[in-house]
Length: 233
Image 1 (tube, one colour):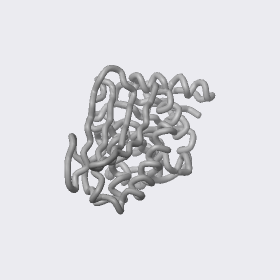
Image 2: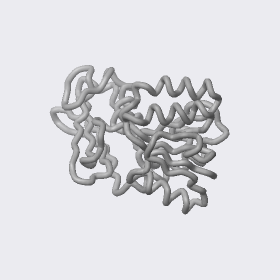
Image 3: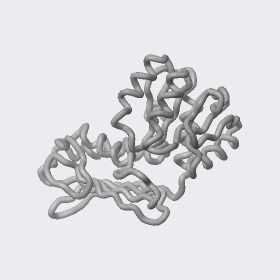
Image 4: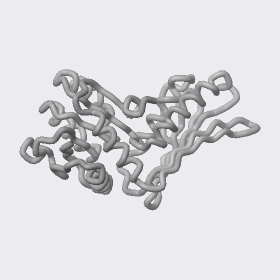
């Protein structure tokens, strides 16, 4: 396939290497606003830019009927508008807060645990914690928000809030330190014990590989998708 990379930071460079290893052509590597000339007629765009740039980048590609795999977080208040644009232009949009196979299995495990804990909400208080490198621009992480949304489906929690909370708000502690690729934990605490599930990324390669696999899956499809559909979870 011909892949264009919009956003060429650390993730973009790793995605580039993995795409080449999997036999694809990387026809563009952009850090600036895309144009049709700069994109160089790709089959799919993989977008890992910044929260400020993501909406405009994705909108431009979809309006020109180029499928987009997007991994940028921190702009999701505009995601419904992007999903509408994808449908109007009969192209494919795939968003992932995290493309790692392990994290997507963790999402499924998290939902199952939330379902199991639902009868015991008066006994256990749920909290989330995420740790990322100091360069990460948004907090909490998109992955943490996805974990929270999985818990909402099976609990009385209605929204999330940074830091520890009580009641209907699910607390998320966001820590920024060193060069941590990403660690996410879910805790259920009572007066007598604690249940914890945790995912620790050792490097960014798992995220990058998942993004390329998503890009291989998306072309030819119309609508809005996530890694659940790609992995059949």
